[in-house]
Image 1 (cartoon, rainbow, N blue to C red):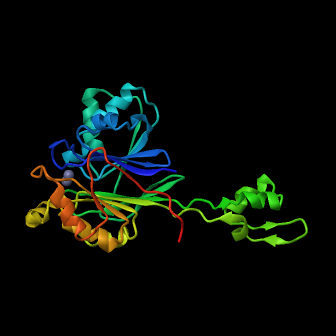
Image 2 (image 1 turned 135 degrees about the vertical axis):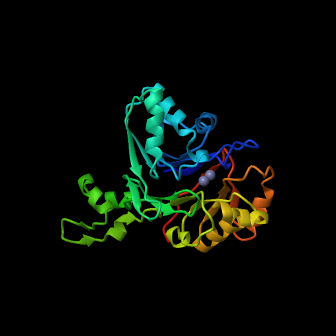
Image 3 (image 1 turned 30 degrees about the vertical axis):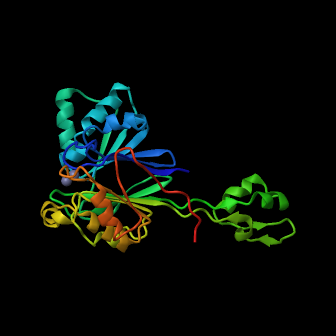
Length: 308
Ligand SMILES: [Zn+2]
Ligand SMILES: [Zn+2]
C-alpha cells in the first residue's frame, strides 16, 4: 500500500548542478501521477526506474517552461510505444493550445489527450478515483498557478480473522461488515462492528506547492498534510527577490509547514545561483526541524499509520 513521492527534477528555470527542472511522480497504491514535466523528465524516469506507461494522469501547476518543456517529449515517447489509453491532463488555461500546436506540425499521438482546465483561483476537487482525491491549491505567482493536494480516500475496516471463524460468518456478509455493519447470529444475538473489525489506517496526503510567493492562505487548505513539497527558490538573503518574482525562501517554506502542522517538508525549485544547498536546509530546519532537501532521485515515503 505504497504512498511515495519520487523527485525527478528539483531545480528552477534551467538544469544546473545536476538538478533538472521541476517534475515528480507520486505513486499511490501503484497508481502513478506525474506532477509537472520540466525538460529532461523522461530521462530522469529512466534513470530512477519510473515506468512511463503507468502514468494515466498529469497535473501541471502552471505554464512556465521549467514546468512543461518536457511534456511534448514525454507524450511523444508514449505514442512511439503505441499507447492507446487516454491521458488526462490537468492544467491552467493555455496548455491545450500549446500542445495541440506542436502536434499539428509534428504529427498526432496514438492515444487521446483529455485536457481539464484547472481554476487557479479556487480550492476545488479536480479529480478522484477509487483511492484518491486531488484538490487544486491556488498559488500566488507571475502566471496563473495551482498546486495540488493529493488525499487518500478512507479505506474499509479490516476483518478480524478469528471472529469469522468464531461466529461462522459467511464470506458473503464480509463486505457489509467491512463497511461498518454488525452481524446477527442465528440465535438473534447481535455482534457489533467494533468487535468484528479493526479500524482502517489513517488516509495519507501530499501537497505540492510550487511556484508561489509566501502566502498564509495555503495553511488551512493543507492543514495536517503528511508530506509537503514547498518551493524554496531562494534563501533569506534574497527575500526581496523572492517576493518580486513570485517565489519563496526556505525560511518561508518552513513557516508554512510549521503553521500547517505538516508531517514532513521537502524543499525544492532551487535557483541556479545556488550550488550548495546546505544553507537552505539550515534555514528551514531552524523553523521546521523535519525538513529534507528535495533532490533529483530522492524518494519520500509516507508510511501507513494507525488512526488516532
Ligand atoms: Zn518554476
Ligand atoms: Zn513559474
